[in-house]
Amino acid sequence: MSRFYEQLADIIAKKRPFVLALISGVKGSSPQRTGAKALFLGDGKIIGTLGGGCLEAEVHSRANRAMKSGKPETFEMLLDHDFGWDDGLICGGSVMGLILPHAAQSAELWKKLAVTNEPIRWGVKKDFSIAITDSTSDWFYQETVSPLPALWIAGSGHVAQAVAPLAAQLEFDVTVFDDRPGLANHNFFPPDVKLRVGAWHDLLKEQLPKHAAFGLIVTRGHQHDALVLTEWIHRPFAFLGMIGSRRKARIIREQFIRDKIATAEQMNAIACPVGVDISAKSTHEIAVSIMAQFVQKRAEAVK
Image (tube, rainbow, N blue to C red; front, side):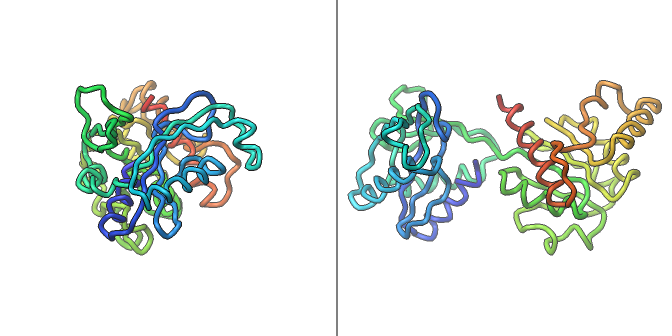
C-alpha cells in the first residue's frame, strides 16, 4: 500500500488537483474490499481503483463535482440489477465510501505513510478531517499502514530480472543480492529495486528487516543456491522459495539433513520448486508463477 501513498505525495508535490475516494465499508459481495482507494485527477486520470465499471464511473462523476465544490461527502451504492446491469456489475452487495476533495491538506501524513518503517494507523473523522487515529470513536474510517513486505532475491540472472520489477509492482520492497556487478546493476533492474553486490560470505551476513520478509533463491547454479540456503534457512522468513527441479530439491534436502545443516521440518518449509504450477516455460511466465505464490503467501501471513 505504500506505493499508493508515494504516488499521492508526489501528486501533491507537483500541485496537481485531485480528489481522494475510498471504500470505507462493504456488505455482501462487491468488486473491491474495504480500504480500496483511487485518486481522481483534474485531467481525468485515475490512480488506483475502486473496482472499475459503473461503481468507479459513478464515484468519478461525484469526485469531479466535489473537486469543483470543495465539499466532501459519503456515498453508499447497492450493486444490484438496476445499478450494474449495463456493465455486468450485479454483485448484489453494497459499498460505502468517502469522497475527499481536501486530501492535499494532509500532505505531511501522506509523506509519512509513503516511507513508514513501522505501522501507522490513520483515519477520516466524522467531520471529514484526516489524521493519525486516537482512542475516540468518532471516525468514518480507519486503517493501519504497515511497511511493504521485503522480498530478498538471491541472484541477478534472467529469472531475477523478470521477478524483481513484477514484485515491485505488486508492492514488495525488493532487494537483489549477487556477487556479479556486471548483472546486479540498474541497467537490468528498476531504480526502486535495491542492490547488494559483494562476496557471498559478506552478503549473507545482512540482517532481515524487522517487518515481514520473504526470500527467493535463484542464483546461477546448484552450488550457489545451496550456499545461500545454508544461511537463509535459519532466518525468520515468512516464506522462502528456491528455483529448481524436484530432483534438485530431493538432493539438497538429503544433503542438508545428512550434514545436519537443517532439520527435516526446516527443509519441509522450503518451496522448491518455487512457484504455482501454470506450466510456465518462458522466463516471464516463470516470474508470474513465482509471484503468484508469493502474493498468496503474503495474504496468508497477514490474516
